Length: 101
Image 1: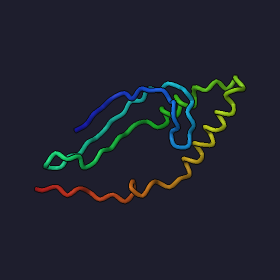
Image 2: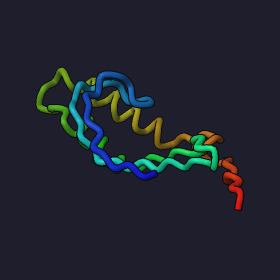
Image 3: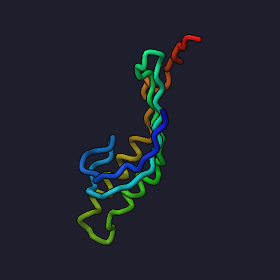
Image 4: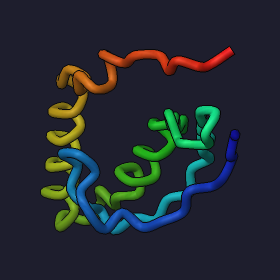
């Protein structure tokens, strides 16, 4: 099954190491759900434009206002921490599902 949708929300909690900015976002997403013969969910894959999301969360900060400078610095620091991490082993050590013929 394939689902295509808009994810709408407000950034009120941390996104990894990026602190909440309070900015609203709207991102197009696609989700793929793979089921086995007994209709059990085997795998779910979600795809979206990460840059579009980050642009809305961090790009919406008013850098002319000095009160947002600390938050902007924390966001940049969070981005740098996130970009240097290795992927979680669960994302790289996957086994393909066994389907009955």
